[in-house]
Image (cartoon, rainbow, N blue to C red; front, side, top):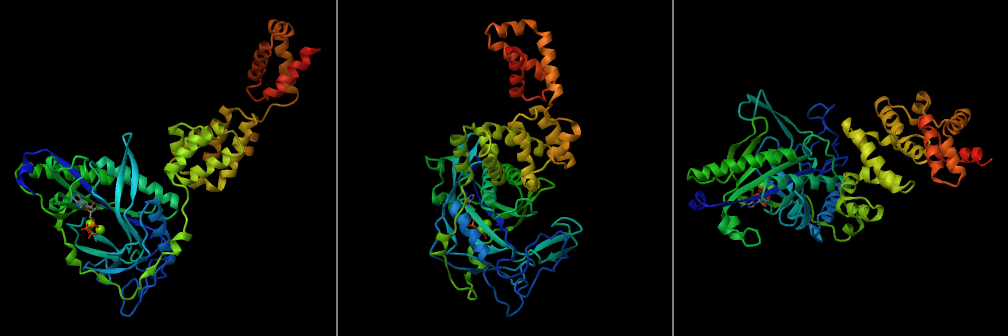
Length: 495
Ligand SMILES: Nc1ncnc2c1ncn2[C@@H]1O[C@H](COP(=O)(O)OP(=O)(O)OP(=O)(O)O)[C@@H](O)[C@H]1O
Ligand SMILES: [Mg+2]
Ligand SMILES: [Mg+2]
């Protein structure tokens, strides 16, 4: 980079490589299970193929290809007629074959874009490509950090887990934008049902960042090709969360600014994000593409996806669904956003809205149910066996058999905290609609105590009846049915 940068205004240029573990039952090139590691002993979910033993051959997992095509469709990528696999050669102990099976010049998804909202502004981030590859094994640096460990443990249970690497154009201009992008990408992946965000390490990010003299940027805010190629970038690895990406990039930008301020040059290098210390540390100079000696994987024929891709469909995506919720159910932006935050929430809302008033459904799902779940750090998928119980509760509210206050504060909270069904709580707490004598007694008492309102009603003042209904409701603690009370009052007064 030119030394002028030291004194000039600089623009921030960021591009991401996002590695996403695909949620399949088995690995991408063998039949080993991809179950999370928790209960498994290290190195038990392995076979000659994922251990790279001589003579073992890869067989491509159909489910992984299907997931990759779904991602391509969601990102508006071009999915080519045929796609091929390559060997990316390098030595590292997590890679038993000494090469990673990945894709090179014919990835399964080419181009594309994803729109994100950042502080109310809509930004479209270009997708360069997305390709299918195998995850390496996992490495544990024993007795400390990557720098201070005395030895390293290797677990090949993860080796061969299907990964999709989504590479973006260098379109980000701030760390906050990358965070918004990652959140959006996760939302889309969750809708597609190809990704489990709760799994440790299921999303890993390499963040590339360089500072470019502001005067060399194009008028439309993009970076000219030659400027990009010229800029020395740092690639920050070991980022595993949205927040981590934002923090690592903020640190890295200040570090680069300081280097330039001192009149030095930025090195093209690979750096490691040390989450604990909140700093990036130099690892090695950045390898160039030629270092990897990419060549075609002869053990896997080219894959024809031309006809197959037409049969693979994707669900309505979050943005489209959000917009439709606004139009179809009259929801404001905030409610529509909440109700489309995950596919499970959106599906449940639509189920409820199809049976009850959409406004009631929105309040109950967005405010009451999600509010109480959030408070307990639960997601709707944690209670998916109980959705019918929640529906029965909403039905009781819709039929006015339960006051809104009791429904939320007593019944809903009891359901979540004690695990009981709504009917059991209503019985136990005596919250059911007051019936028979109790209501009749209250009607008689209210008529006795409010001679003026009674006279007004008899003089033809219809408004007076509402006042009397209100009095009876109050006397019964809100447990009477207002329609029924109205009928009883008229019967009593019309004589
Ligand atoms: N000058 C730059 N400043 C910041 N980011 C850049 C710049 N030039 C390219 N990038 C970004 O760097 C990333 C390059 O990723 P890609 O996978 O193509 O190559 P790589 O990082 O060299 O390869 P590898 O997969 O081995 O890490 C892209 O996200 C791209 O947008
Ligand atoms: Mg890279
Ligand atoms: Mg890459």
